Length: 427
Ligand code: PA5
Image 1 (spheres, protein in one colour):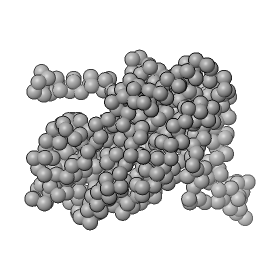
Image 2: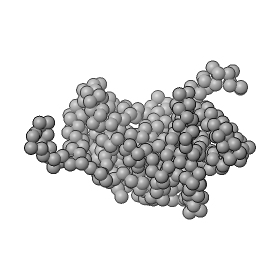
Image 3: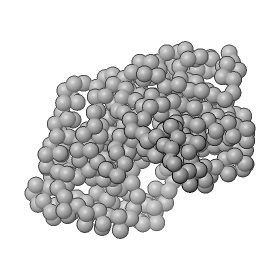
Image 4: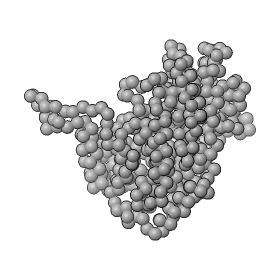
């Protein structure tokens, strides 16, 4: 399995002696766990260090959820929900939003009507909830938890605690204390793995396993990436290539990256990617602003700007080579819609032509291009892809001399909320 990265410019021109040296230093810092933010480098070798017994226990929890319930409500925000949401959306069939179990997300925004309607919807279902917060103190999921835990207690009485699972830090946080007090099952977010790097921990794996997808294959994909991307071969290591091209474009006056896809199932992979890169890189007045488009939809909304607007954008296409289902256009005797010229072309082939046409047009319009291709959308390829992005994001932030693993800028709005609402200790 290989992720290929293609660049519209000359990659070899980017790889100067100075850049080679910098990459060697970063590589050393990551793999010896001595780089800035080293306390949060636990994700680097996490996939290969997962133990069978741990996975067995996770499967038992997932099976237990499915035996008791037909809906799992996952409460979390940012890295505590986007990883599993991305994988579930990528693997689910359109119009059939669940596989073996329905998974609904809450706590990722604050809306009274969303929560009210969710609780009404849950009335006719059997429910388990999984509250996920590494810090155990994030306000938005805590608000949703308060309502949903009350709902569970009213509905299931003493049995409620066997239907509430908490994924949080091993040693600290209000959520941990609550789980211990009420006897909820606790899963641990490893201390050295931050939210946006946590998709291969219980944070991402439990919802994916409960929904009935193959987490072993997902982890295998990540393990392969862990192995393949370890090499210091700057010419061929795709994760280094992607980071270096991004950095080169940023330095050349392109501070905005658009992740473009033709596959609607990748929408939440795009959202996960935006959080990963935005929160990891956007610090100290630096960093590429990550945004995303879904084509063809956005060719008819943002396409004009991308082709012709202010020149500050570069475009990274995320392409899937093979699809498992497709339709082929056929000839009609009456060519009323004038589409007979497309007969014999599958919709996947059409999208590929659309990609080439768009890429050439945007490149001519002054938008540099990167193309990242994976073979197909399944658990293994997704595991590989997400690990690839995580590693590339670390390289990217280190190339800007930034700690990829903190998010000091997110604190300011939180402090203001606490002040405005007079949280004890903050007024
Ligand atoms: O990547 C991160 O660390 C953040 O996006 C967190 O995941 C997010 O803020 C939620 O934090 P917590 O899991 O502590 O509730």
